[in-house]
Structures are given as structure tokens and as C-alpha cells.
Amino acid sequence: MRNREPKSLPFKGGGSRKADEGFNELFVLFCFSIVCLFYWIAIDKRKILKYVYPTYMYVYVPKNNDIGYDINCEFDFEEEHGISWTVRNDEIIFLSCNGDVDSPWSDNGELAYKKQKAVKRINPQNVCTVEKARELVQKGDLQAVERIPEKGGDDNIIFVPEVIAEWKQKQDIMVELMRVKHEADEYFCEVKYKDDSVVPCSLTVSAEKDGKNVFLMWIEIWHYG
Image 1 (cartoon, rainbow, N blue to C red):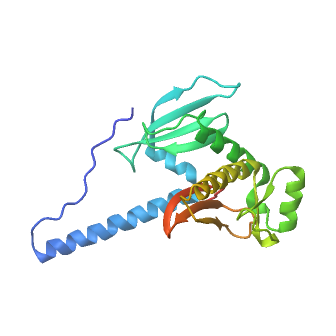
Image 2 (tube, rainbow, N blue to C red):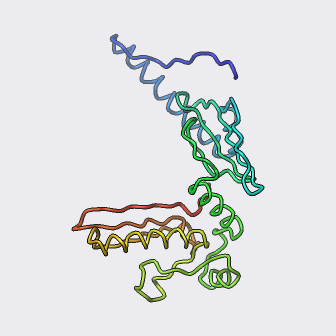
Image 3 (cartoon, rainbow, N blue to C red):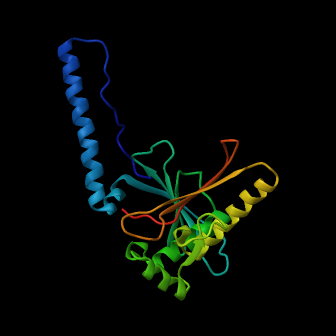
């Protein structure tokens, strides 16, 4: 573990107006420095490693010839909880606090792994037309699914990887069961896009009963930056 000097921040107590003005100047300078730091990191994401100090690695029992492990670290911007990466084969599938990790073999781990593999294969940023999306449907890289079940119409079709289509179908079935049991009476599916891509970056499936939310599931399909 890396030894680091203890850190302190200016503390504002009682004092003269001149002292208060001096503190304010230091505080503004401190905030400006933080903004510059994050901008500097944004230019080259590898620079974040300057603030990460690995502590230990936990290796899971392999499954189906896949390997999975957690890399746990101290992190300057989250000193209390640290930071952890969960990796399956060559994919980082989770980023979380130390001690709050999910197994790469869990249902969530399986979903995250399949999703990332599918998104890397198609690169959603390059799928900017419906024609291109339909070509990928023919190749089996995307599926055309209904945003609102049984509504019909071309404007109700969304293009998503197979693993996301399966996830959405499960949520649709759950909401339909709630409607049969009179636990829900309205279904919603919010779709968000980034830039010119016709592949959604996220889906939010929800249901209401008498105007009150009774079901909510969200999934990020892809992101960048």
C-alpha cells in the first residue's frame, strides 16, 4: 500500500474581514484547481491512475473457461470506500466501491458482459441510419423490437442488441403480469439516444397504478466519453 501524507483543507473560523477575504480567495483557487484537474484527466483517462493505489486482487473460480477477478484500490477522490473494477476475460463489467462488488457470474454480471461484447461488435456511434440498423438486424447483430408492446407502427420500432431485447422482454412480461393482477394500469418505455445513433443509449421501462409509479427498471446500453 502506498504511504501518503495526511491532507488538510483550509478551515474558516472567526476572524477579521481581511482574513475572510483571504479564505475566499483560497477557496476559489481550490475549486478552480479541482476543475482543472478533472479537465486534465478528461484529456487522457490514463492519468486517473496517478490517483489510484492497488491494494489487492480477488480471483473468482473460473466458469466455462472464463476468468473473473476484482481489482481493489485506494482512490484519492473516494478515500473512505475506495474503488474496485470487476473484470471478466477482457471486459471491465463493473466499477464500484470496495466491498460493494457483484460477481461476474451473477445475472447482472452476465448481462453486463454480453452487453459490452455486443456493443463493441457494432459500435453504436457508427449506426446512424435505419437502413444501417436493418442491415445489422439481417446479420444478427441487432434486433428490431417494439418500444410499446403490440402498439405497431414503424415509429414504435427500436434497434437493440439481442441481450437488450431479452432484457426488455423480461420487463415487459413482468409489467403485463402486474396489469393482469390489477397492480398496474399504464406501461411506459422511455428511449434515449446520443448524437446521430439510431441505437438507444438507454431504456427505462416503468409502470403506474392510478398515476403512481409501481415499477421502474433502467439499463444503460452504451456510452462513450
